[in-house]
Image (cartoon, rainbow, N blue to C red; front, side, top):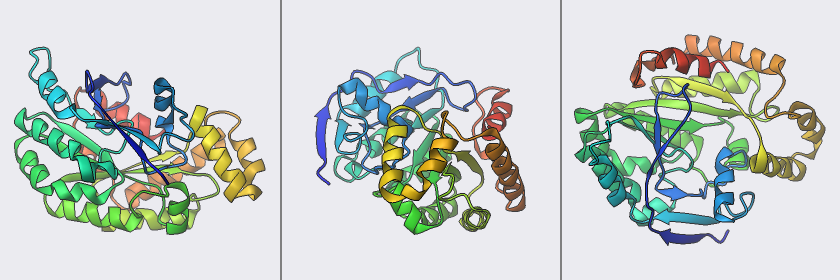
Length: 301
């Protein structure tokens, strides 16, 4: 796959996230677009703002925000900034392949450290281990939470739906290393894809593996599809699993599967979270008093 990297200066790096059911209000992204090529990615729509094809170019045209650390320092130094929790990687993976060359995420971490600003990092990449030195120092001085996105224990399925991301085993090993280093780490078990990675046996196996990695919590989520992500996913099904196309047409008349399916899976999630003791949400920073309740409500959706 040919990937084009476009270096640009950004005017701002922090952006407001207007969702009251999340424990953070702000996001930051050192890149736009993501080489991981996850077929279900909800963030594809962001490329349409650049007059790029979100279906095809989201993973082949990566915008590199070369001055992101400098802009972050400027924004953190503003008297208006209240040291709110920031999610690094809200619509891209901050540790995708480009980071090996550009090290923008690492430089941004230095700014977070300098200003003692709380941070949560979302990634699918074990490249985060490169920055263990900074992260270990940061967690002694301020709040640091790392959340790995994991979708499947079945590596064949994982390769199909996340073709250029780190293997599930690499992510689980990274979680263990980070936890042994004293960092707070949880897992977004997302997305649960109907008919591909949602069997009872597979869910049991992935919860067991996550528990063995010593992660503190799991937040599961069932795949929803809309816009460019829905088009991209259905193309994948037609090419790779044509035998399932009728089922998906029935299941995804709307953005998510039928309520009966969701209720069944969420009941199982509750059982597995309790069984494997993956409910230590105290490691998640609660910005306001009602955030813990809101987070639990979001998990149950």
